[in-house]
Image 1 (spheres, helix red, strand yellow):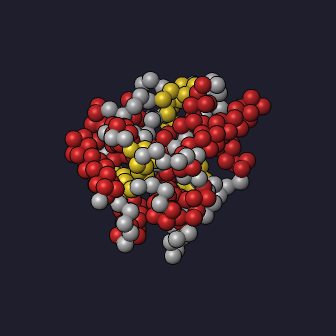
Image 2: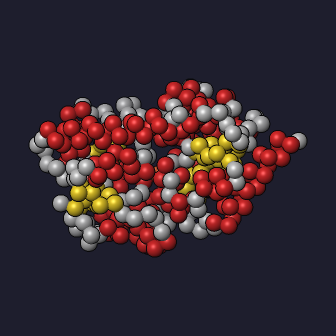
Image 3: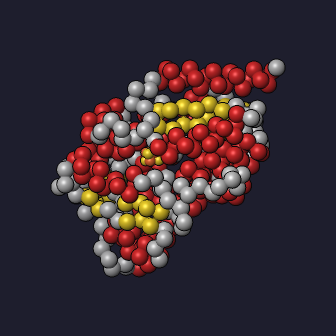
Amino acid sequence: MRIGVPRALLYHNYRPALEWLAKENVAELVFSTATNKNKLDKGLALCDDEVCLPVKVLMGHIQSLLGEVDALFLPRVIRLEKKRYICPKFLGLPDLVRAGLGTEVPLITPVINAGWNRFRQFGEGLRGLGLGPGPSLRVLRAWGQAARAQEQERRRLADALDVPRRGKRVAVLGHAYNIFDEHLNFGILRQLSALGVEPVTTENFRREQIEEGARCLAKDLFWSYGRELVGAALYCLNSRAVDGVILVASFGCGPDSLINELISRRFSASPLPLMSIILDEHSSGIGLATRVEAFVDMLNWREMA
Ligand code: SF4
C-alpha cells in the first residue's frame, strides 16, 4: 500500500524517523515534493481565509498526493509529551482535510496521545503506517531504529551552541514547518549564511538549555512547541549564546501571537536585538531579504560602535 506523507507541518519535526522508515522499506511511504507556488495556491483555494498559513500549505501538499497514493498519513495529534498539548489544529486536521477535499479522501489517522500507555501508542503507530494491528519482529525492530535515527539527529544538531562562534550567530526561532520550508520563508537560513551569519534554530538547543529558559516564566506553558520557543529565546537572553534573535511566525497563528508577545516583552528590557517576522501568502522575498540584511547590518554596526 502506497502511503502519502505530506511534506508539511510535523513532517519537518519527524523527518529523520519518517525517512528512515521509507529507506528501509518498512512501509511504502511517498513524500510530496517541496512546497512551491502551485501547492500554496491550491492550499489557499481549499481553506477559509482565517486558517493559518502552514495548514493551507498542508492542504496543497495533500492535493498534490491525491491519485498518486492509496492513502494519506495524517495523524490526529493531541499530546507529544505528558501534561502538555500542541495546537488544537493538529487534533482537527483530518476533519479540516475532509471538509476541504471531501469525505472520500483516503486518510489514515492514528491518534497520537502521549498520555496513553506505550502499547496503545505503538498499536496506533502501526495502524498509521498501514501495517495492521499484528506487530512482527521486523516492524518492531524498525520502529525502534526509526526512533534511534530521530534521536541521533537531535543529538547531532544540539551540539551547535557548544561550538565556539567564528562570527555572528543568530537564533531563528519558530515552528519547524516555518523554519525549514524554504518556499514559505524565502530561505531565511540561507540568506543569513550568505551574509556571513551562522543561523541556529530551536533544534540546536539542548533539552536542558530550553528547560533553563522556560523556567524563567512565572507560569509554566502547556503548549509543547510554544514552550520550546520561549525556552530557547529566554535561554538566548540570559546566556548571550547568540548575537540576535529572529522570531518567525505565520499569519493566523493563535498560539504564536501570545508566545511572541511573551518573548518580545522580555526582550524589550534587554540589549539583545530581536526581530519578528510574520509570514503570509502575500510575503515578498525582496521585503524579507531587506529586513534580514538590515538586521545583520545593525548587528555589525553595534560591534563597531
Ligand atoms: S501552532 Fe499556529 S501555525 Fe501551527 S498549526 Fe497551530 S495555528 Fe497553525
